[in-house]
Length: 488
Image (cartoon, rainbow, N blue to C red; front, side, top):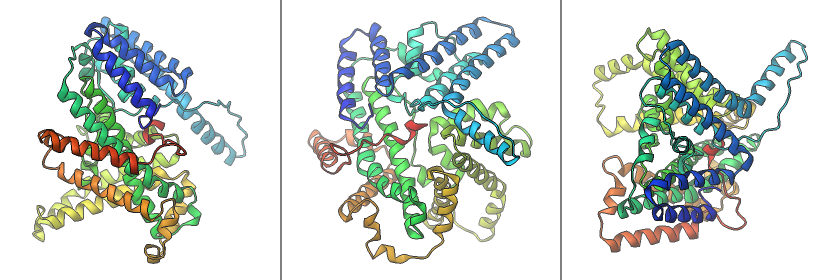
C-alpha cells in the first residue's frame, strides 16, 4: 500500500477517524495495529522481521538499563546491534558480498561456492533497523530510560507514516509523544493535510513524470549521448528530491493530523553553496543519525586532521552502502567524502582568494556560482547513484562528452517517454517546486497560507487537488511508482 494510492487514502481516513473516536489511553493500540497492517500489505511474512528487531532491542534496552557493570552493558549493546545488523545483512547485503567474494577468488582461479538465498528485500528495513538501533544506543548512553511498555515501544519502531522511508526518529524525541494526549486540533489537521497535498504534487506532477525520461536513458545507456544524458542526470536530481521529499512531507503531514511531530528531512538542499551545507539540508534525519551514532563515536573532529578525514570517509562510505548493496552506491558515498575533504582542505585557499580579489561573498553572482558548482558536483555523484551498474555508469560518463545541441530543436527530447505536452507540464511543475523552495528561504509558506482568508485558501486547495487529479501521473493503466527510498 503506497502513499500514492487510493487504498492508502482510504486507510488513512479510517485510521484517523477511529484514532480520534477512541479514548486516549488505548489509541496507541489502534495505531500499532494499523502500522502492522500497513506493513503487511507489502509482504505479510516480513512482519516477523519488525517484530524480531523490536523484541531484541526492547529486551536489550531493559537489560542495559538494569545492569551497572560497564563490560556487561557493552556486551548487551554489542549483541543487540550485531543481531539487528545481522538481519539487515542477510536480507540486504548477503548476495552483494557473496558475489563479490566469488569474483575475487575467481580472479585467482579459485572456485568458491557460496550458498544463495532467494530473498525479496523487505521494504523499509534500513529505516526501522536504524531507528531501533538508535534506541539501544540512547539507553546505553542514558539519554533515555528503557521503555517498559512493549506495545508502545513497538509503535515507536513501526509508526506507519514514517515506517518505510523515515524521517528516522530518535527515541528521546518521539517516545514521549506516544504518552501525550493528542486532542483533535483543526489547525493540526489543516496544516498536516496541506503538507500532504504538497507532497502529492511533488510526487505525481514532478517525480513520476520526469522519471520517464530518466528511466529511458539510464536503462539503455549505450543508446544516448551528450546533452540527452546531461538532461536525464539533471532530471534525476530533481526526481529523487521531489520523490523523497514528497514521501517525507506526506509522512510528516499524516503524523501531524494525529498530533505527532516528526523531524524535518529536507531544507532546500539544491540551494546549498557547499557540500557541507548540502548534507545539513539533505536527508537530515539520516545525517543526524550518522553524526550521533557513527561519526562522533569514531572521534568526530576532536582528533588529528588525518583521523578526522578518515572518520568522514568511513561515514560517507557506510552511508553509500546503507543506500544499496552495489558498488555504485559505495562510489557515490566515496565521492561525497572526497568532496567534503577537498572542500575542507582548500577552504583557507578560497578565503585567501576572496580577500585578495575583494570578492563580495554576499553578492548574488557569487552565491549563484557557488550554488551551481555545488549542484554540478552533487549531480555528477547522482549519476552513480542512479546507474544500474558500475559498468553502465562508466558508459554514461564516456557518452556524456558528445556535443549535440540539436537535441533541443529536433524533437529528440519528446521521444524519451514524454510528449511535448507532458514535458511542458513537467517543466511548469518543476518551476513551481523551485519557486516554493526559493520563497521558503525567508518565510514558512504553509504558515503564511493558513493565515489567509477561507475563500482564498479553499480556492487554492481545490485548484491544487483538481490539477493533481487532471495532470497527475496515476490511475488505471499506470503502474504506481514506488517511492524510491522505500527500496532502501
